[in-house]
Length: 218
Image 1 (tube, rainbow, N blue to C red):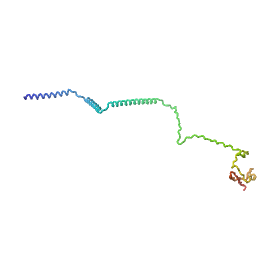
Image 2: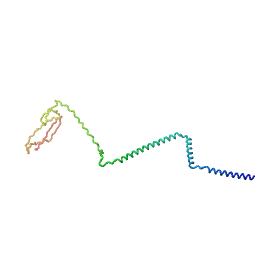
Image 3: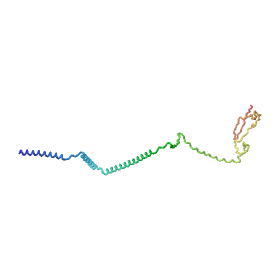
Image 4: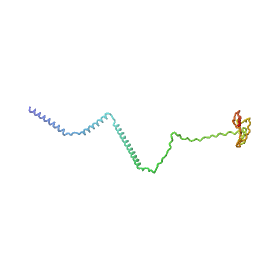
């Protein structure tokens, strides 16, 4: 009996050792996965988790697609603007090159200088002289024949005119002539009387003249 028990324990140990060896052989036979593959798998897992979270959050895939289309249209418009700017820059550079190729103006040709008169400060422009309007006075009505009188003129002729009341003169009562003295040196006759003052007084529209004389012999 003792031999049988020892034999069984020996076989159990052998079996355990064989199993350990078989496990080691399996580990050697299985290839080890590289780190890159593990990262790719982790990335896929994250994307799957994101999609699951989007579905759980109730986000609409159509809205995301519309947003993507809007972004594409915006990018397309920006590209067109960039192309337009490029054409403008090319045209400007071409014009600048053409201006550089233009030959310079020779010294013999003189540019015309236009001088513009600037108004001086504080000086007012002359106003045009307006023509003076001359008003023609209406002709006086012709006097009636009863109002006219013949009046002696300076040349000795008589001319019919209207005599005014102020033109009537009353002569003085004094003698109008004085004795004439003899001739003086040089054969010139001169009166020895001189008029000193003449007084006029208006009485009822009639002028009365008085002559005051002064004797030079006194």
